[in-house]
View (cartoon, helix red, strand yellow):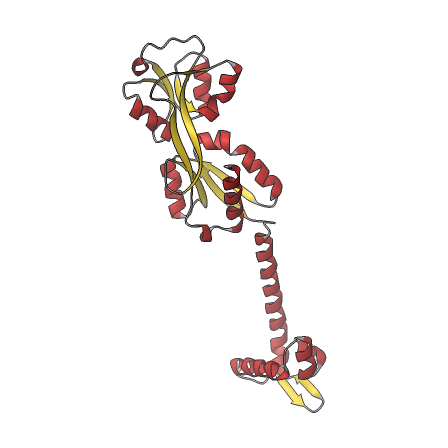
Length: 267
């Protein structure tokens, strides 16, 4: 298009910061690919042939599309847009992620994120299938993120003679919390199996039973005096949260930015 605008190969080459031979060779390759001459060459300069006139609007459209593509890439790279699909368990989703996701949303308002609450096994399978970009899993593979402790809690004044026969309120099977409870307290009398930590806490506060939960989940109730930690040699139980993904190099820009923020938050 520069040749058409300037009228000579020399002027067009100067504008494109190319040598004239290099520009001429490029035009020759284009004409070979088209199977036709696209420029008339003469003493007075260069002008488009009929074939060149037919090619010109398509060439302009192709260049415009390429520029649009560059802008789209730049928008994603600068995180002006994008999408993150994240999976995590109940403890992480409820108590450890909200402040981080709020900070991420404030820093990258154009990025849409989707948080899916799921067990470690479900999250790992979703990452493998490509349904999730990133998952925070407990006691699973991946990049170490942060530690957590599970503790026993009950109402102040509750007397528990033997934990094995105590009434327990707990989460459903498949969660790591329930897995630790079944392993360490195999004779526990599970009187409620619930789907949310908040519901477990409400029933413990009401005196239905005791619970094994993350310290992050119970710290406010303990600080307010509504619950107390119960002593037992098997607790606290330490577990590790990790970031699972298909490889750092395969992460989309928005997901890579969230991963960096997560790792930075762990200290």
